[in-house]
Amino acid sequence: MTDDAFTFIDLFAGIGGFHAALSGLGGRCVYVAEKDPAARRVYQAAWLDKELDKEPTVDINDDVPLDTGHTVSELVERAERGEIKLTNIPKDFDVLAAGFPCQAFSKSGKQEGVLDQVRGTLFYNILVIVAIRRPKIIFLENVKNLVGPAHKKTTYRTIIETLTKQLGYVVNPDPTIFSPHFLSPEMGGGPQSRERVYILAVRNDLLTGSDRPFTGPVRSPGWSPDEWRLTETRLSERDAPAAITDEWVESALKDPQLSDRAREVSRLLGDIEQYKLTKTDDWFGVYETLVKKVSASAQHKPNSRGSRFPGHPIWFNVKDEAWAAQERADARAHEVPGAKARPWKVEFLDKSSRFVTDYVDVLDGPAGVSLLDRITELKNKAWRKFEWQAQDATSLSECLIQVRPSGIRVKKATYTPALVAINQAPILGKDKRRLTPYEAGRVQGFPDHVFKAMQRVGQPDGQSYKQFGNAVHVGTVQYALVRFMKHHFGNVELDGGTGLGVLLKHSRAHRAWRIDEDAASLAAVAGERAPLTLAGAIVDDLEDADPRLATLI
Image (cartoon, rainbow, N blue to C red; front, side):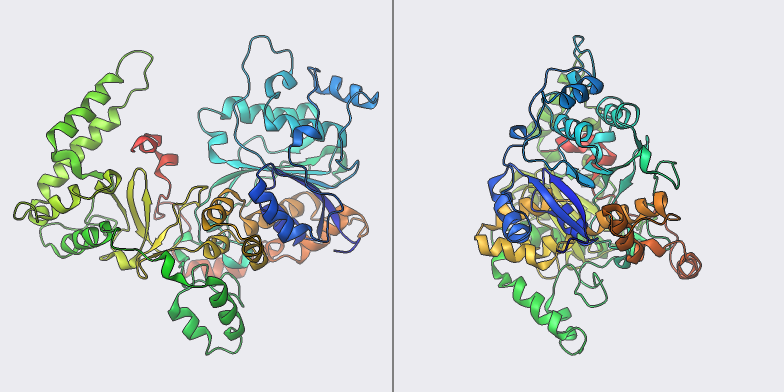
């Protein structure tokens, strides 16, 4: 990295998703904070061998002291008098990036100002750094729950009002939600439904262009998420798909432009035998039989989505009278004042009971060998819950499968559900194997050298899955920042030798900058495709659409 760079600090940095995105736009990291030792080792191995003079900060509270002030103005005054010192944090940098946890803020009646509300949360550290160091741009990422019922009018509103009214930044007061599957490969998208709140803010005094808050676009014009094919859609012109199959490698080896890349990704993929399903995964054969029998049944007509399965989870234990009675009793126990009602549980029990009755032709058979018996005898109780989102598919080999605490979920192999910080790696039905850690990194848009760093530090797969699941999606962050720069500085000429000027120069070279110029051609292409709409999209995380399902353990 040369001096011709903008500078950024990376807070709660994980393994460097923001680092990958910002360095790719000409950025140089000048400060890192990450508490998790395993993630910090990978970050250092991947990014900091030559770039950062100092070691990453382990606990950001060591560099951002807890202050007794109540208001931002009081905080700034104390800092100017030298009473607050930000140890190790550079005095000047261009961008503050942080993927911070969603933490509830205090509603105590004793609070006197915003610092009292957020003290003890990680946003407090961000606020103090912004108030004292005044970075030009702030880029915060958080889970969609930040703007859910529990947080939107408290936590989210506090963040926005603090940035705008007290710190002097321009930011959209309404949530701006991005997801990689809404973006085409050319724009940095990826085959993963990962809706996240992006809070992008620019310092008020820097604006000579648009001072309207940035609102997007959050999608690629003319692109539909259902165009993704996890094992077929290349992430870029000279790259492989996110998930690597023998078929793709064999085909790519015959292409002079792809053959070297095919050999490289095949080497990094490694031995996939350890990721294949085993005899203990007996649910696969049972549900493959169910799907094929239902698909072949003349008694069950497909619905408008082409599916012969209902759109709700099926609890096959419902015919166990003792189990069903216990679940209904649990629902009644939550009907008392002060408890969180669970009327949905009764609804799902009733619907599951109707399914088992209506599909008796498929499920019935001799005692002990009927398909219903085979399902209810699966050793893991969670495996007895089944959720079909694969529309008109007729075999698990066409699908992507997640084995979750709330049951087995099946969808088409277009894009994955959001990768999470626990090992629930999606399963490729065709290969009967889980996505490898390397493929999880590809789904998240990481360059290969981050996975190579994981290999060098010798960490177990579980850590790698967790770290990729905790990260930001690299391409989506780049896309959002480029569009943010065009919105505020698209018609502005900045000194190319300044940090902001460097970021603007690299943003202008990114394909996402040219969405507007390409609108006519993209619209023409879109006319030949299915309309861009959520109506035909697969709901990947029903907990977001219906929080009732989060409790189906």
